[in-house]
Image (cartoon, rainbow, N blue to C red):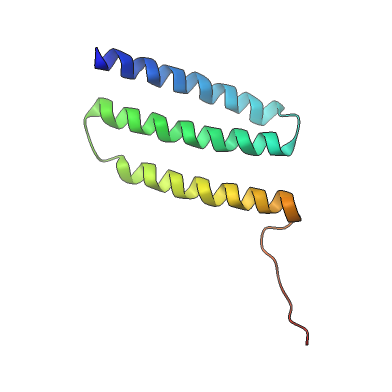
Amino acid sequence: MVDILLNIALLILSVATLGCIYRVVKGPSVPDRVIALDAIGINLIGITAITSIILKTEAFLEVILLIGILLFIGTVAFSKYLEKGVIVEHDRGDS
């Protein structure tokens, strides 16, 4: 019974990821695309976690952490770019 539910959850996350990919391609604005990319990353974490449960292994836990860290850094970089237009500010202290 649990295996069936895990496979259904995997299917639902896969369909949700495809919907987010559509939003990234056809998004009406850049912030919508950034949110869709963030949602794709979260779905990818869920897919990896369910796959780890199905395969009965803990080998993917480090992958989940790595995806989470990269997702956070990417979201912060996109947000900073949308707010200021640059990611890395070169502050020249001319005094």
